[in-house]
Amino acid sequence: MWDKTERGCAEKLRKVLYERSDGTYLEPSKLLFKDWIMKWFVTYGELRWESPRIRVNNLMAVERHLIPDFGNIPIQKIQTHAVQGPSNQMVDKEFCLGTIQISIGILRSSL
Image (cartoon, rainbow, N blue to C red; front, top):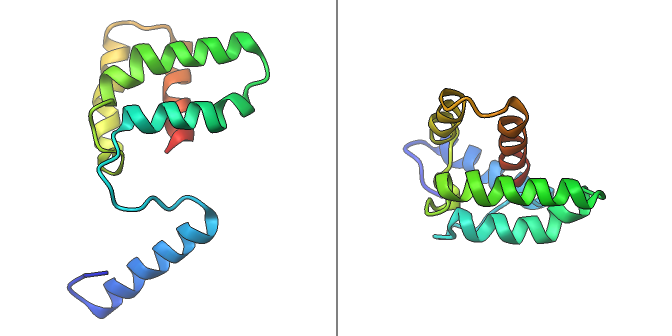
């Protein structure tokens, strides 16, 4: 861990230790969002959605909206400002509110 101050280093270390204990820690890597989201969908997403119809709708949201917008971005680089642009574009293109909510919900759950 590196930071300008000892306090900053300690804070980063606490965050990593918490994320490891919580199961949300990602090793620094160049894993792309498109690879992560499909792994997440099969491993976790399908367990969350019992209805086949919901699984199909959510997979379509992943393939049609999330992968084209975020697919080639390393997973650790996806931050709020990176999400806001595509979300605004969906609104500008007058996508159905349900489609926007599903896409953002999946994105939020997967990260």
